[in-house]
Length: 183
Image (cartoon, rainbow, N blue to C red; front, side):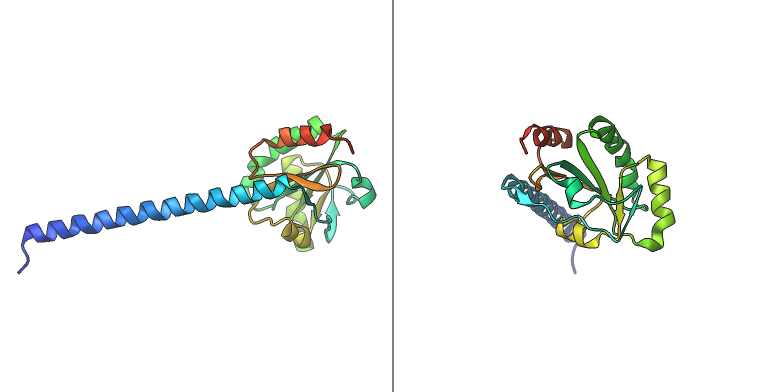
């Protein structure tokens, strides 16, 4: 028959194993995130061509033509009306827009389709986002590898991706660098 001491020793061993397992899983998750960020930042340093910006329809005016975007610095924002982090990120984006609107094209994109028209419009009104926003933009967001929202990108004058959320620099620094480059 096992003694009380054997039982207590067994419990401690089980707890130690659970703690060690939790630490290993946490470290693996952190390492995965760091590797993913490194890959994405390194990829952007090679200036990946940006995908064509396409949407099923547009809110806050017509969508930009290729001619409208030619030679311009572009900020693309992926969002959804139901996304609380998107709502929290909107004030910073509106500030950036106010600062750069004469020199940078801002475009919002959502996967939501026309069936969410009222919710999309309400989101844009509540967040004070006034630039063109495409809905039903699944192809472009997929090409941008938008795995989470909100997510933003900066495209330079040569239509290359030069910044995303995983980049080391701030979005404002990326915009300034892109503006400083000659077309």
